Image (cartoon, rainbow, N blue to C red; front, side):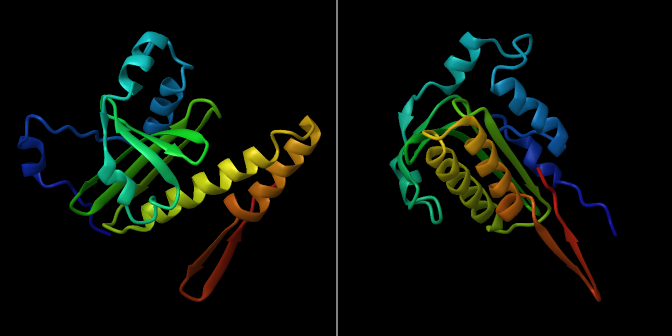
Length: 179
């Protein structure tokens, strides 16, 4: 398989920015965004970069997102969505041949990174499915006991999030993770 690179012209636009990073790198970045690495981003910086600056009504019409978000703003490099009853901090990106989405819920201490070597809208499908499923499960278990919440989380992981079916030519591999 040939190694694909980003077209050099993407790096020539001063006001735009980009990050060349792995999913693991972006996972560490989300951990810092959640406040767990104050040497990288302290609480004041986090509040500043995620403070709502400009309302973005256009985001309310995004296909796949519009059924979930009721309010949208731009912060400093982040979009801040009201996703049902939850606040979601989000950023997505695209260059020819690649897609990326990062999002997190500070209140829920939960983040998601999706990197894709394709120009497919499946990223939005995965992201909205993940957040709607997780927020629904977390809201449903808010009033229950800690044991019930743990069991519900395990059931959710088993049923929806950590089960993957991968078809590779004639071989059929099923990968499952359990609590």
